[in-house]
Image: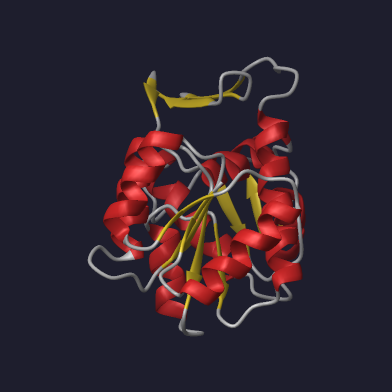
Amino acid sequence: MLIVEDDPNLLEALRYNVRKEGHDVVTAVDGVQALEVARMNKPDLVILDIMLPGLSGFEVCRILRKEMTVPILVLTARDDEIDKVTGLDLGADDYMTKPFSMRELLARIRAMLRRVEIQTAIPEMPLKFGDIEVDTGHHVITKAGNVLSLTPKEFDLLAFLTKNKGLVFTRDQLLEKVWGYNYSGDTRTVDVHIRWLREKIEDNPEEPKCLITIRGVGYKFGG
């Protein structure tokens, strides 16, 4: 696991607690070093501070997402929605606002890693919906034969909804089923990921035919 944090005290606390969970840990204290360490070590998860010297965490997130599918959890210094949404838009799978509970952080790490384990479990037959094919066994989703570039959480969300085609899920249910824990009412991340997915799979994102909003309830895939 890679931890990127320029505050030495917080970095040591994170390293200590993550190692206690049984994970191998590598660290970086700035954006450039973060990219070098990630490319060399191919971590199974990245904890990424946004406010970094030199190359920002946002830029690191953008570059990592282009190069690998590793789950990314960003740490934001402010409870500012724009920071959270920007991180998600750049490919982060989760975020936490400083100061945060170490216990909650570790719970989120466990949930994210569980999702990775599930993805590598027994392969399932590909599901087809018009020109969209969802192949969870090979972790690939295509549209009209073209492989879609999805973040790990985008893939998880779309795979879950397609497996449950026609069923309506509230945002809280999607947080529980896809993210693996409760966001304590913060459901903005679901809306962001749905919007992001629509831009990739819908012929017209403004008039979605696949990812349908059920007003006052939540979302479903298809009819």
